[in-house]
Amino acid sequence: MAEDALLSGIRKSFNIGAPAEVEILHGIDITLEHGAFCALIGPSGSGKSTLLNIIGLLDRQSAGRLVIGGKDTQGLDDAALTRLRGETIGFVFQAHNLIPAFTAAENVMMPMLLSRGWADAAMRAAAEALLDRVGMTRWRDARVGNLSGGQAQRVSIARALMMKPVLVLADEPTGNLDTAAADGVFDMMHTMNQEQGMTFLIVTHDPRLAKRCGRIIELVDGQVVQGAA
Ligand SMILES: Nc1ncnc2c1ncn2[C@@H]1O[C@H](COP(=O)(O)OP(=O)(O)O)[C@@H](O)[C@H]1O
Ligand SMILES: [Mg+2]
Image (tube, rainbow, N blue to C red; front, side, top):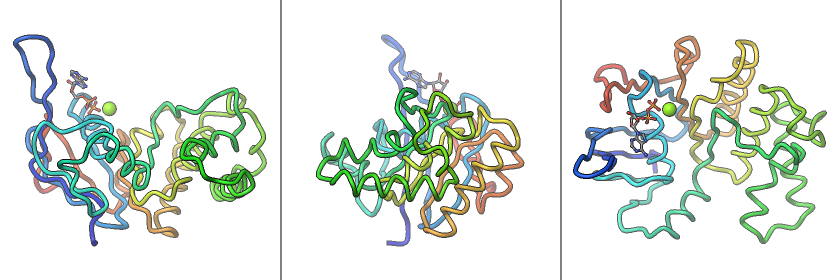
């Protein structure tokens, strides 16, 4: 399988109260090749998060075909989608969504705790190895509430990678960070892409960071701008 995500004619409408239905995504065609390091840019409200949530199987499209990790998602029920999401996708959000009262290592272990069947020592070892990879070994037993924004975002990248996803979806992962911290987090993702071959799709407002991606997809008013990709 050469591609991790294949989108064909993806449309999304929201029901905003009778009788109005408003279409946000107007037929999106995107192929994400395995190992791609790709930026998704576009004005606020253009549909970037909506699109990411559909690719990440958190929300369903209204029309169109979505193939994730070689699996056509049409006809999959919620349980099957949840399983496919767990096996395939890692998420990094702008607000890191970590649990502040838990340590860095505990937060990274969380996806494995939820999926069960893992020995404590194996989980701990996997979490520590990932925290090492993102340069957070010193802080692995620190509560996340005591970390800086950049440090917390590194922890959330480690957590996203815990289940060995083929595709990492990051929605403005550096949006709350200063330039130096944003560069650090971005470099981290790039290294993971280069060394582990994980595919990344990164929403960013920062043209400087977007230019460092191998590919830029631009969304305007719910459509991919032709030529940009
Ligand atoms: N659940 C929802 N119900 C209704 N409208 C929504 C919903 N989610 C997003 N929208 C609308 O869809 C448009 C695109 O939103 P979004 O995908 O968040 O854009 P972006 O991430 O590019 O800023 C916006 O106009 C937003 O108000
Ligand atoms: Mg958004």
